[in-house]
Image (cartoon, rainbow, N blue to C red):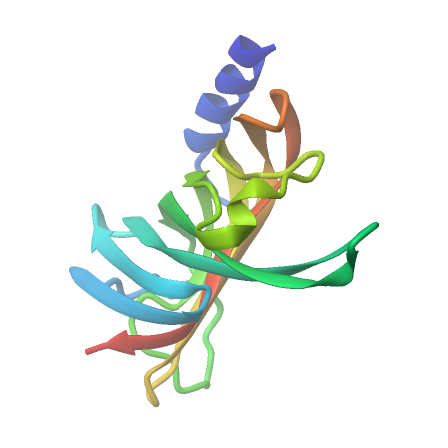
Length: 184
């Protein structure tokens, strides 16, 4: 099963997108640093080619869970470290009259990532199918918008192979992204 998934990923990554969206190639900056508020962290995008880049992100995922037991019920908040990466291939975009900055556009990518264990008191609570201490890899489609105001928006979704301490290896939906600001 894993060999089949890896073969699909390699084939997907080598597809040339001749049916691109328009005639304007994205203007990729050599290196771009982004600070994200959701999730709390930072992202670094490095240009690899005319339309290719490597985007690495890391930080803390913040969350909450509700529990109920014989002692009562309540809500606990937690933070968990994460690391993600994408090897992106931006495709040409239609002429847009919006105030977009560099590295804005739609892309396909090979995404990979790791989610660590929860930090603090919540680390002892385990849910079925928890994505703690797990990794993923798979193809995604995404879009990134960087506006002249410095606002940054990124989202990618796809299907990938997920495996970890509480998740048996399976193909599941994966996503990466962030909202924040980019540094010029």
